[in-house]
Amino acid sequence: MEAWLSRCLDSLLVQTYENMEIILVDDGSHDSCPAICDAYADRDNRVHVIHQENRGLSGARNSGIDAATGAYIAFVDSDDYVAPDFIETLYELIQKSGCAIGQCRFARVRGEALRSEPNDAYRMFRGECLMEQLYGPEEDATYFVVAWNKLYRRELFTETGIRYPAGRIHEDEATTYRLFHEAGKLAYLDRALYGYFTENAGSITSVFSRKRLQWLRAHEERILFFRENGYEKLLPAAYRKLCDACITFYFRCTDEVEEAEMLRRELKTKLGGYRKEGRAWIGHLPFRTRFGYRLFSVSPELYKQILSRMQET
Image (cartoon, rainbow, N blue to C red; front, top):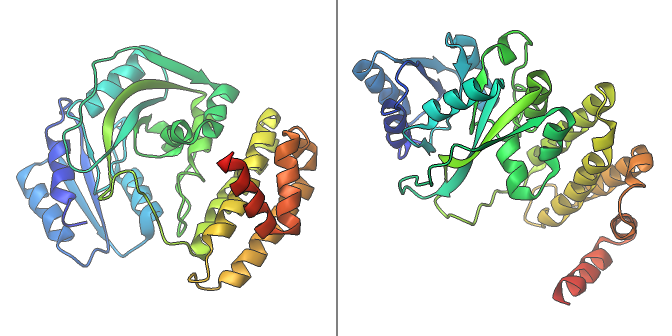
């Protein structure tokens, strides 16, 4: 991340809200990032650096949480950057709304300045309605699930013991819903104050591997949590998301992927297991969706052909 780290840190140092600590976690970097972090700590006494052996993104987030002393916590990934009023605006949002989480929209950026129309109007989501946002249209759901476009009251972590799962990817999918449950309500401001950087804007891709199945594990845990905490009305959408993911992952698992055949068999088996386990809730889904799951279980290729024809019409 050495090519983008300074841009990220510069956006933090010019925040209009100045009473903050900036904790940089060097997660075993082998490039010049550790030296860049130390240089910024020398320049500004608000900057503190943690050097640790590589523990992955979850380990880095957890180290930051454990080291934080402020009343609020925000996460910023090292290749991203934020608007100058990112912290101040979300802090004021929490004060006005009485919520434990303030959230803004993010924009996919390639280095340009973040620009958004001034907008102080916000929406509040509570309880089951808040959890429902995790199953909305893809872009809207992403705003809610990610860790980094939010400001959290620190006690959401310190008083509950919530931490990001060690050694796993999709750590936000495994954690955000727990924070929502503890917070009870969230205030959402429809302004892009966070810049999610991608070198190829609009074309976000990732190599598929067995590690991607950790997404399924996160959602299996979420379903168990919903059952145990009274969110049964969300189970049809939760099982649909799991089943749809099995199909998506199956077709992303091309022959170039290591263990491709084994992974495809495993995904078919998982889909069958989810259909059986969640049949009481999947039964609430549209017939077309349920038929698609059955067709895929019989013949993924036939499913793909029919789906392609339907999309062409």
